[in-house]
Amino acid sequence: MKTPTLRILLVGLVWGAFLAAQTVDDTQLKQVIIFGRHSVRSPLAPNSVLNTFAAQPFPDFGIPPGNLTANGAKLETILGGYYRLWLTQQGLLSGNDTADANFVYFRANTLERTQATAQAFAAGLLPATTIHVNVYQQGSDPLFDPVGAGVAQFDAARQVAAVEGRVGGNPQSLATAYAPEFDLARSVLFDYQAGQTPAPATPPGKIDITSLPITVTAGSQVNLGGLPLAETVAGSFLLEYAEGMPLGDVAWGQLTADGVSQISRLSNLLIDLGYRTPYLARVQSSNLASHVVRSLVQGSTGNVATGSLGTPQTKIIVLIASDVNIAGLAGLFHLDWILPGYQPDFCALGGALVLELRQSAATREFFVRASYVAQTLDQLRNQTALTLSSPPPRAPVFIPGCSLQNATFDCPLARFAAIAKEAIDPESADLVN
Image (cartoon, rainbow, N blue to C red; front, side):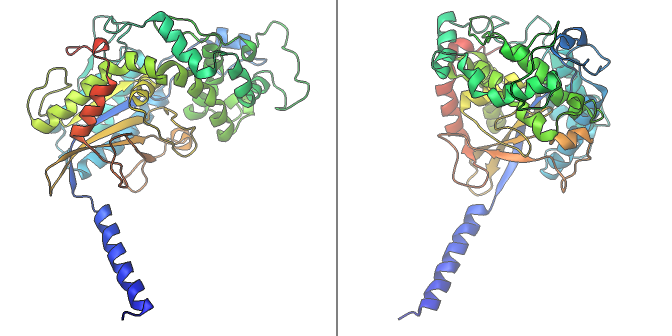
């Protein structure tokens, strides 16, 4: 008869061996898709407009509204340099930039900030050569704006119902649900202590963005009344912090990084309703999803696949667009993440949804490994150098209905393709553009 001690020892050995087997990663990276947001930009509205919503003038970024800042470009080059280190370690880059450039595909949305971000990222990834960034030349890029490009079309009634159905038919209820964020934003804008009761009246000649009605109407993008304007104004504080402005200029010295993050819940709300709502995600992101899946399949087979990005030899695909695009694709596949200092599912400046195509050495099976990678707010603010030992945070992303029970939530490629086929609306996808 085995003693209790011996039984415990045997169980421990067996369980330890099981855990070891579960954590061994015998996969090799074959291809990667880095789907990133642009880095730090100036606010979308000029100061002449922003100043009508605040008691004090906003700090001036010194560049046109919505453009990438010089610091944003530096930050993206730092980030590209980190990916250079990681992808060299993983064997996708050789260190010969001229040769490696033949296996890299870049595509950016048509906005100045996305094109400039792509160029800055490329300068960090392959600094010894010049990378061509593909930019659509015939109006809206159907990859990132399929509705504007005429590839996809909303049913107006369903568009409105899909969003109103998420808020109980009462969009204005969001003002109550997000009262702490609206109250904090108002106190910063009108320069009084948060929580003051009663709250001071709106200063003469100023507009209170937090009191603008939230409504839902149809359009090429769903219109949420005053919420986008509130997000644009309050979202400026995050840009000021990430830009590295003196703390006295960040929300006029009234917010810490935690306060900036709390107010960013308004950005998350706007994007979640407008792009992660299932019907909206299906219309707005099916074309992108189709191209992504076809690119992964092409990478696994080595055969040309219509509607893919790059060639069968392409190892690194870099797509640069906006937070709404990343959120839409994530919404289509029901992907979630959280990184230190950010709200859940927040699409950080320069952050990227990373899809790795990996192959098992033992079984030769292909897997998709998803993660979300982004510099922290302080890494952005301080232009922190990134290395393999001091990387940007990375969150493994679970793919519902597909991921295995391992630390990286790997998803068999065949299953991922099947899930994508179920999620994608074929009427909203173009196999060419």
